[in-house]
Image (cartoon, rainbow over all chains, first blue to last red; front, side):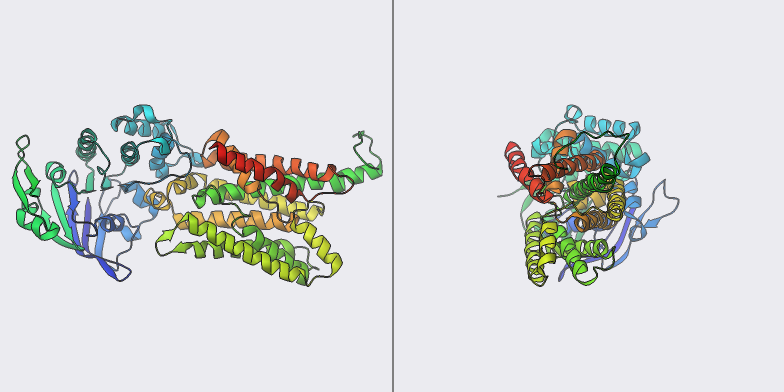
Length: 263
Length: 293
């Protein structure tokens, strides 16, 4: 479980996050939406402790491994990595790293003797690759993959960890339709089967409506709306935050709210 | 006694024994230590800085050590250990300077890093040139030869020190090999997955400065070893630093021992600076590697 209270982050002279709070229970998915520059990526970096807020009521973690709740700013990098896995926006590799080596980076904090992976690490990595439709890709080089394939490898690396919390920064940006759905299904499956929870940044409001349990809408670092998809994804909120007119109806297949642009 | 001679190892004359044990063996051993140190420093810096071109010689680390050694040579020549200590300090300061210059508010990019390395290298070179003009003729000649990479001054004290530095640096950098595998992908990624980035940086920079400082103090600037050796090793074993670091140490040792043998024998009884040989082999080899990939 993840709790963030009153987070304020300043980068340079700009207030990037201005009083952001939310609570995420086990097994649930939170979608973070908002225009470019709204502070979504900064929020994820703050949640895993790589950016320090100027003021915060606190970012707290509870999990089965931790006996009590811990505040992220007081945890070491390896303690955080045991609890939280990040799917960052695309990373570029300058050295010829194989897909399997890349995914094994997710097992860093499980490091065995002398920093070599054991069979459990390799199994976890292979399983994660298979889940992401990449079973045959283990020996391929990262810089020979397409953007979408690389993005799935980055997801596989996060799934190869034992983390209870997944933070995903635009995980579907380069993916085709089938793999967009696969990505969210994998995240949801992980949340259901391991009581994990996920924070997903996405620009696709319809994917947010389909897969998220809660939506946090940011505008210029402030929370514009926070609640269930039905509560947050309203014509007024979208007009106010994104400045565009939309039509809302129900997705005929799932019954969830559906957003259509009006051009 | 000129040229090669078959030695009866079990019944050496006192002169033969003295040449073998006091001159040749320390020199071969020193060459191996220097090669291992430079190759390991190169392998570590390349992964840490995510740049296959990072090399102690290109990043100003060698010149920092050279300036430190020159100052020791000039001011504290009576203390045997002044040279390695000042060389280490010089290497460390140059590394910190390059790193600070390369790091901007937006983080560090490779172009800035190489540029900073070039600036620090050329700046330190001119300081070295200015200071050498103040040396007297005899000191100047020995210093210039040393600057180009010279293993002929091998003393047992220097050899022990280089050996110690090579071992400590290799262990330090190899101990961070798995963390370096993650840093190689990206510092942010590494931090996300549990690497204490600043600690790894400190250990690897420290290890590399120690290795380069000790090598430069013992043998001057032997270029290209830190660039070529890890490159060739990566082509053979892949990018995993847990293999690259130890194999680079071994291959670097072999490379410099061979280069020094060539330096010592091609125009015997005169000698070529070993740094000239490593550059003569290294530069074309590097161009070939670049074109091949």
